[in-house]
Amino acid sequence: MPGRTQIHVATVTALTVAVLAVSSSAPIIAYAAAPALAIAFWRNAFSTVLLAPVAATRRRAEFRELLSGAGRATLLSCTLAGVALAVHFGTWVPSAKLTSVADAVALGATQPVWQGLIASGQGRRPTRVAWIGIAVAVTGAIATTGADVGVSARAVSGDLLALAGGMAIAVYTAYGERARTATSTVTYTTICYGVCAVLLGAVCLIFRVRLAGYPGLTWLAIAGLVFGAQLLGHSMFNYALHRVTATTVSVLILLEVPGAALIAWLWLGQAPAAASWPGLGLLPIGVAIVVLGSRRGAVTEPVADPIALAD
Image (cartoon, rainbow, N blue to C red):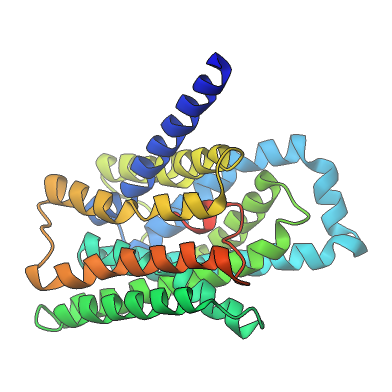
C-alpha cells in the first residue's frame, strides 16, 4: 500500500510540474527580446545538443538500425515529423508575439481536433461525440479570431498562425505515431529536434534573422524554454505515461490554456480581451470532447509521446 501511494504522489507531482512547465512557454516567448524564428531555432538547437550525446551513447545500435534498409521507412517518418515540427514552431512561436498569449495557446491547443480530421482522412472515422467536439472547438476558434478583428490585423495574423501551428503539430503527431512503433523517445526526439533545428536555422539565415546579440535576460528566457517546456515538461509527461493513459495526459495538457493565460496576466499584464472569453471557453471544452470521444470509436488516441502535444 505505501508503494502505491508513493507512485500516485510521484505521478501527480510529475503531471503538475509538466503542466506548469508547458504553461510557461508562450509567456516566455512573448517576453524574450529576440525574433520569434530565432527563439524557435535556439529552442530546438540547444535541446538537440543536450539530447544527442545521450542518444549517441545509449541508442547507437538503434541509429545503426535506422540507417539500414529495414529501418529507413522509420527514419523517413522521424524526418517528416521533424519537418512538421519546424512548421509548427515556425508558425506558433511567432503567433505568441503577434496575438495575446491566451489566444495563441488556446488556438494552438486545437491539435487534437485536426488529429481527428487526419484520422478521418485515413479512414478512421471520428465518433459522433468527437464530431460534436470538433464543431465546438472550431466555433470557439472562429469566435476567438473574430474577436481580434476589432483589435488589429496583427492580432488576427497571430491567431491564424496559432491555428496553423495547431494543424502542423497534428501532422507531426501522425508521423510520430508511425515512428514511435520502432524507436525510443530519445532517438525519436533527437532526430525530430535536429531536423527541426536545421530547417529553422536555414530559414533564419535566408531571411537574415538575427541569431545573436541578445540581452542576457533573453538568453535566460531561451534557456528557460529549453529546460522547462522543451525538456522538463515533455519528460514529466513521458514519465507519467507509464502510469496514466495518453487520453488523460491530453486532457491535462488543456490546463496549459488557463495556466499560460494566468502567467501572462500576472507577469506581462496581458489580460485577455473581454470579447475573446466566449471563444477561449469553448476551445478547451471542444478539444476535451474530441479527446474523450475518441476513446469510444476508431479514432486513435494521441501518440504515446505528448512531446507532440505540449509547447
